[in-house]
Image 1: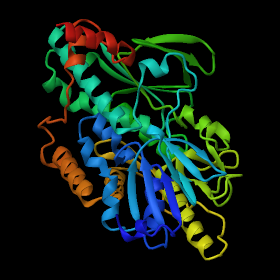
Image 2 (image 1 turned 90 degrees about the vertical axis):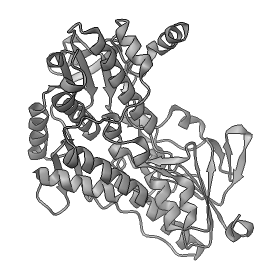
Image 3 (image 1 turned 180 degrees about the vertical axis):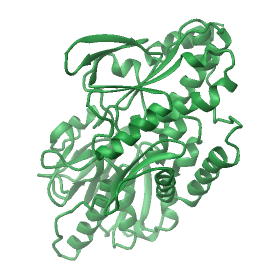
Image 4 (image 1 turned 120 degrees about the vertical axis):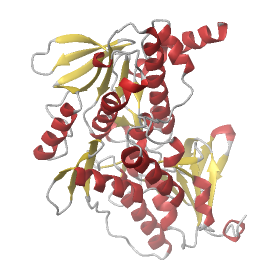
Amino acid sequence: MTDAFRNSSLPHVVIVGGGFGGIAVAKALRKAPVRVTLIDRNAYQTFKPLLYQVAAGALNAGDITYYLRALGAKQKNFRFVLGEFQKVDTDSKVIYLDDNRTMRYDYLIMATGVGANYFGTPGAEEHTLPIYSRDEAITLRDRLFGLLDGHDFNEDGKPFRVVVCGGGPTGVETAGAIAELKKYNFRELFPGMNTDAFEVTLVDMAPVILGPFTEESQEAAKQALLDRGVKIMLKEAVREVEANRIKLQNMDTKEEHWIDANLIVWSSGVGVPKVASQWGLPQGARGRIQVDENLRVEGADGVFAVGDVAVIGERGLPQLAQPAKQGGTHVAKVIKNSLQGVETEPFEYVDLGSMATVGAGFAVAEITKVPPISGRIAWLIWNFIHVVQLQSGRERVATTANLISKYFLFPGKHDLVAGDYNVFSKRARDGVLSASQDLDDAAVAAITKD
């Protein structure tokens, strides 16, 4: 244990969540006269903007994960605790973790992030595959490759449809990446499959994709998806999901209809976990923790919230990396100023712009004070900015090496990153061509019996 933690008189700053916001708080307090404890249920941080590359077999999951304990190498007032937050007693300033553990704090920062929001859609949680965590990206990859492996063996020529629900950056990037797998890889990798019958469909209830972007960027991204063979269905809301199909409702006519789907990706939005209502903190819009202009949780002394889990006013900030990072840095400033008895100016988010990639060689970028960019230059900028934002040199080198190998050095080698997908291959060989998680128990039982 370092001197900072032996000296119990130092104020104790506890950060719950090791994402962009939590790490930003911890790093900004590196030289402050405080003890910093970071708590997360995982031992690593995942760089979520590159998860679609893991799902498409272009990157290893380890390429974009950072071991959280490594923060202590250059920060002597830091320690990491593996655990899951349960609730907080703001009067006693005590938090409760799993395994009946407790921890006292002087300052508490909630930076837990969010997960998939199914908006009460029947069957969505049981049958679709979200892509907001490392495990979810690996799950999507293994189910896709596994089903295609078994489908290839059957040589029955049956169609295979991937439906991506949600036309935001995550949905657009995922749809584009999977469509490119078909275009450049599937004919050689799965010769027994009718690749012409493989379809990627992007569904969104909005009239456009990439809603926050300019019309110029929206149209450029839409055309890039169409060029890659993606079928785009706009003004179509998902009303119900089953193992092999989804029900859509046209937003203009209100008519409902079903479309077949073998694998359904859910990227329609994010929300706070259901257990947030048990945390003992005030909740605002969509269950997010209500904070003031300095990101303090209302009515809770010494408690702050940053990133996706926090909301200022009615709508809050975009649930992206930059607001989380800037918010984390601001909270650290508030804490340091409070130790010196100095007031802090209200938090002001600086919008640096937005970007989205559609596939190899194409992206749209809207950078502040720069005209919108699309095409290969935007794609190179997108990759550079995201690689630079990775936490460690190991991640940056590994990610750069893998992306250069895939897109420049060996583009025609089809050497995708694969996992253990035997269960899903057998499921497809048995005629059950569905990635639904609701079928997992039966599939595992069949494999065990054999």
